[in-house]
Image (cartoon, rainbow, N blue to C red; front, side, top):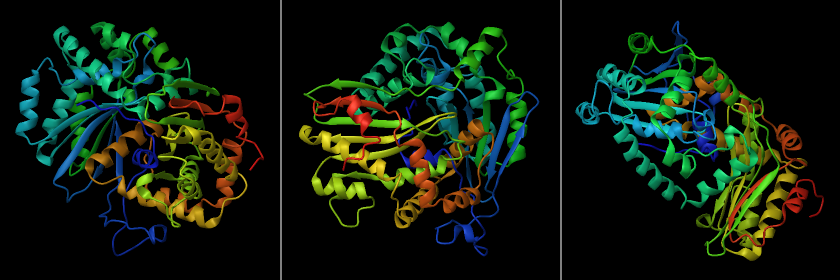
Length: 484
């Protein structure tokens, strides 16, 4: 049930940032004109906070026959220490292995009997446990979520079994070059800081994490002020509030001892972005895999949507798209024409107080790696001085379409609500989002590029056949070079 997520592209970022409420079919708002907006029956996000600080947020759809309910916790691998890195993900694995009230078999049988789906995932900043079920089974689903969050047994035998499972999972992740490169990118960009740690943790930690580490993580981070119970679909808001009062009113409002409070505060300190690099040359690898990033923007930054529009202008490309005069971005056309890469992907990854904005390049031709990097950063430089209205409009249209595609179903809507409430304290309506996106102009994009890209320090993560990659100082120089 464990999954491991990195927000590496615009679709993931959008799924975690914005919402789809629509307008009534008979009254199309000017803000949505030209955008394929589904019929809405006035659904909106409602929120309530209990006396202990526990928040309930819902979007009720009266016609929906199913609901997704889940608990979003404002704690992930960032809330760990060097010694306990990997604990949040370890806890996720153990959540379904039995509680004080239910054995693992009883948990599984209860979910199966209601035809439901129970899952969880861990990211750098969040841990999420959620269930999808028929509306009449929502009380049972909330009961189960409460049970696994507050009463997990954390039995030594289960810990040892999951230790082996996580080690095997880590071996599989290490084979995924994109995952490896982005883990190293975080490690070098935020080196020595909580956000730079991996989600799974180092092998030596997985081998030594003890029950006490897991219990301490729960006591420090599973507190009401950092938790949101989310409902999307047919569950009414008031029903979920009553269920929260029944099952979560006794969750501690905050950490109960001074050391836990101090640790929680320390992990929330804004990290410093460090211009640096990590290179692992392996000529037996099939490709060169290179990520280059500047410091990006947080979820709540005024530049958040401008960063996404700018990212969309740079675009994405792989060889399956071929070579066409109608490729979306200038860089796509150039890379395709000159056969410089297997693929590239621009990204804008946001966190609560910082982010990474950059590009991920993959090439099986070591001789063209230097040209690939050179012309990619040349495109970044162009963004500061010469952006056309047409490419901005194309990028905005892609962005708005992604908002809808990323929010298909109650689980996606629940995830959107949970992430936004946990991170920013409120959920943006689609009208607000479209208003902001529609207002972005080429001038805004060029201003963003001048402030965030031009002559800024970069973090570089490279793996594979990278002999042809420029030295760091030369790559850094390309951020402000006037050479063609």
